[in-house]
Length: 316
Image (tube, one colour):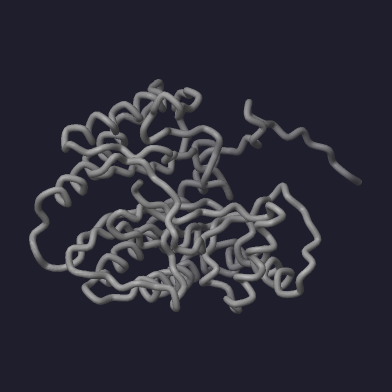
């Protein structure tokens, strides 16, 4: 016997899902993942000291996430629950804005006074909780433009959180982010999007743009009860115009709608591992068992649009 069921989709063609209001256990999964993410983010901040190797810190925190998620939902009933990294640890320094998660042989070391943006994330059952923070490396006082940009980002984030609510819109949040940044003579970074988060989806179609311009606009939407927003606030002491950095892109995500029979054996082995360990959420090739084969596999997968890259970005 086969049962047919109608699947509901929103206006963008994205499958509608239950919210934590419909099913409170969903919120428990978000919270459990968030607790692990926050603890790992705190540990990463402690490891960001003068001379520390960025790739080593990233690998340490990724390992910590994978170990910690095993300790929650550990009963026999829940042991098969999907869990793991929701976003690989990235530590982007100074004018590098994001997605810097280097391989060990391509890494760099932290220096005194570096402004380090740290991001990581965990998930349970596909419900992802990602978080980020900024630290200034070293024990000295933080002054001048470094202090301005850190305070601008923190205050803009707080203001944006307060602005999100029932009956307000994404455009209201965009407006407040830029206003706060300007109070510190800084700029909200262009091209940054905060997405609605759903199960297995950290980049839903409804978005808040960090900074609206004449050429960069998004469709307006109104927040509703049950929405989960991955709020991503970036502020720069420069113009706030990102470009791709020369560093190797190591963070990717499966393009679920694309199918292709890979030709190279190493590419097929790489893709099998991706599908098994990271079927829907972002990963770093640093996590692959054979990184040399992964570099080759990534190239063929990208040539056939089977992966979505998260390139390293820096201030223009």
